[in-house]
Image (cartoon, rainbow, N blue to C red; front, side, top):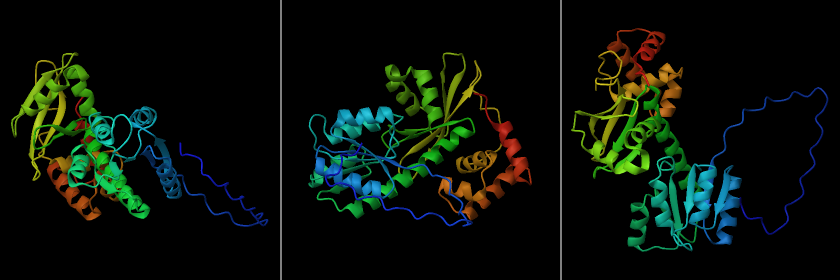
Length: 323
C-alpha cells in the first residue's frame, strides 16, 4: 500500500449528536472504488501520487519495481497503472509489454510517467502498449485527468467487448499486422482449449490470421466439437474483427439461431436487452446515445418480426448457441 506520510495526521473533529426526531437522509449505495497501481522506485513520487489519488477516491497499490508490480497483479488486477520507465532490473517498457502480452491483464490502461523526454523514448512507450506518456516533473491535476479518462474509456470498451460473450460468441480483433489486439473472455477460453494455451499460442494466432475476409475457418476442440471463426470485415484502422462460436462434432455450421442478418452492433444491443438492461443502460455500456439505441432496436424488431422488447428478449434466448 502507500508509504506512510511524514507528518502526523490531524485529529478527527468531533461529530455533533443528531437531534432526537431528526430526519435521516437515505444512505447512497456504495459504488466500487477504482484501483490504481503506481510503479516507481522513488519514494517521494509514490507518496505524492498516493496522497493525490486517495483524495480522488482511488484505492492505491504501489510497487518499487517490475517484480513487485507483477505480484500486485496476481493479487488484484487494477483499473489503471501509473508506470515509471526507469527502474532497477526490468524497465517500465519491458514490464508494459509483458502486461499487454498477458490476456487477463491486457485491458488495463498503462500511463507512463518518466523523466525520459526524447521523441524516441516517448514512441517506445506507446509502442510497448502505453496509452499515455507524461514527462516529469509531474503536474498532478493533469495526471489525474488523464488517468480518469483512460480508466473510464477502458471500462466502457471492456463492457462492449464482453457483451459479445453474452450471446454465446467470442470476439477477437487483429491489428493491421495480423497480431491479436484483444480478445473477449469467451474467445480466450475457446482458443486456449483449441491450442493448448501457452504451448501453441502461436498456432492459434496463425489460425486466426488464416481466416479469409468474409469467410470462416474451424479448429477441433478436445471434446469433439469445433471452434469456428467468422471474419466480420476490416475497420478504417486496418483492424479485423472475428466472431467465434462452437459447432457440433463433424460440422462447422453456424450456431443455433435464426437466419437473421443482425449487425455486430445490433447483436450487442440485443444481448443487453435480453439481460434486462434499459435503453439508457445500454447506451452507457456501449458508448452511444439512447436515441441511437432506439434506432438499433427498431431495426432489430423489424428483422426479428416482433413488436415488443419482451418478444425480442425471448427470441434472443432461442438464438443463443449451445456452449
